[in-house]
Every structure is written in structure tokens, then in C-alpha cells.
Length: 202
Image (cartoon, rainbow, N blue to C red; front, side, top):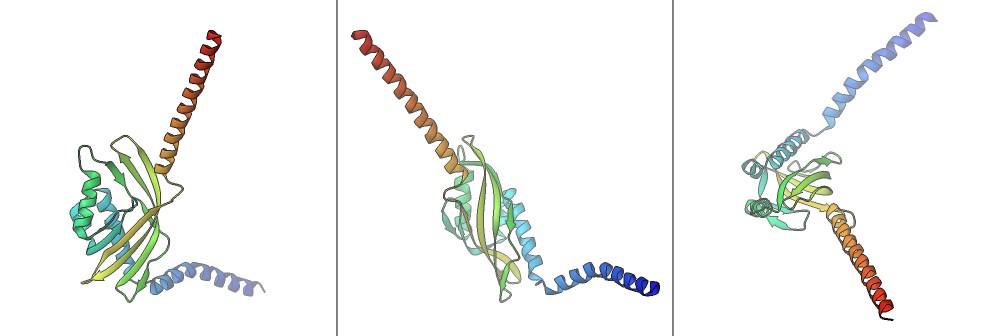
């Protein structure tokens, strides 16, 4: 009985030891090798954007790329992307002083036919405007990637923020409330002064 128990225990321990490695091998066997290339494209793009390395960024974008930015502007091609970034990051002073992106994917990209992929997820991006306003924006995004001449490129990108819950809307609300509060205070003071004047006249 004791010998049987030892054999069972040894077999269980061997199973526990081999299971993680076997699981990893099974996962690697099932995962499309394209995902490794797509992860590298994602990492290279994040690094290029956060360093404002335009030349490197353009090398990762398809020549006919279509981008819809969080403010609703849609551009096409490398020239369109460059002009949009220049409009926001250049000028005296520029609209956006600094920014950084931190995207996360929800799950593995959906690959079609080996040369097209759809990726989606969220991002918490940081913006600092020249007027002193600084805030974080949580957004959702969807990306289309294509493989051309053996290289994966970003072909389309769309980002959006919550219609009823975003930092710019919150800032606008705070400003409106402050104006309304100031107006109410002025109204009370004016009413008090008019009432006092009437009492004095009477």
C-alpha cells in the first residue's frame, strides 16, 4: 500500500513539473507567429510616438494610412499625419506642449488570411497643453494592420473618448459652474445693494 502511494505521489509531482512546460509548448504551437511581429510593431510605434521620432513613425505606417484622432479629425497618408501633428505640436505657442501614449490590447489580434490583422484595446494618454492645462485621457482604439512586402504596417487607426465622460468636458463643466456661481454671487450683491438703496430712500 505504501509503495502504491509513493508511485502515485511521484507521478503527481512529475505531472505538476511537466504541466507548465507542456502548456507553454501547446500555446506556442497554437499561436500564429505573426503575433510576435505585431507586438514588435506595437512596441516600436509606441516608442516612436513618445519620442516624436517622425521618420521612424512614418516607416511603420502604410503609405495610404487613414487615422481618426480623438478630436474627430481624420487624415490620410503620411502627409496628412505629418500636417496634423505639426498643427498640434508646432506653432508659437503649440497647442500641445508634450504628450505620451500608453496603449494596451484587449486580446490577441484577429488575423485574416495571414496578411491582415485587427487589433483593439484602450490607452491612457497624458497631455500637457501650452495654456497650462494638463490631463490624462482614457480612450478606446481600433487598428487595422496589413502585411506588405513581408513587413507589417499600420493601415488604419481610430481612437475615441467617452462622449459624456472625458477630462476636457469635465474642465468645461467646472468653468461653467464657476461662471454660474460668480454670476449668482453678483446677482445677490446687486439685489442687496438695490434693496438697501430703496430702504435708505424710504
